[in-house]
Image (cartoon, rainbow, N blue to C red):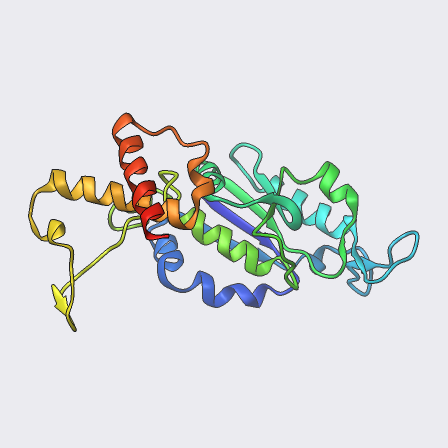
Amino acid sequence: MKIDVLSLFPEMFTGVFGSSILRKAEEKQAVSYNVVNFREFSESKHGTVDDYPYGGGAGMVLKAQPIFSAVEHLQQQCESKKPRVILLCPQGERYNQKKAEELAAEEHLIFICGHYEGYDERIREHLVTDEISLGDYVLTGGELGAMVIIDSVVRLLPGVLGNEDSPVKDSYSSGLLEHPHYTRPHDFRGYKVPETLMSGNHKKIDEWRMKESLKRTYTRRPDLLEHMQLTEQEKKWLDEIKKESDLLQ
């Protein structure tokens, strides 16, 4: 995968792309990163990338020309199919694991990180393929949002994680929150690991993990269960969890 990022502050990405899984992914040649300061594509002699909004109002608006020129330059260098152009924006669709999996199947992603009051609307209408928001809040710029999305996508690429089952079993990948995890020692300050996990019976362990995933999802994110396709056994476990929860209230 090739990932290009358009940002006025490219130095923000140095530590992120040079650390942990993102660095290892590039070393394994699963991905390549390229951060571009789109100010360099401004046709203004002063490198201007923003201007006052038509009609008046507070703040400055990013001009269309520098961003169009930067994206078109990157598209011309692309040998694969047309890349996805992603605009980081509070008005975009809320990001989730399903979207991460969708983007992980692409060959080329271009992220546009904005600042100031907003973007010239023609960028949205005629250049981008996706508008994404991390949630119902506003950040100073799109850089942090791009970092989060890139991290969640790159870890899904083949060969990036040591254990190929890891991304499949993560929270949200199955639609449920992930079950609890334990490691040694078995007894820490009197807090003990559930005996089922010590049994060596893999069928019982799998059942315990599924029940705990259902329980954790029901208690923390019941909205995730509204559209899930559960097996008959999972429905029975969920009914038991609901009854237990009612008794505790």
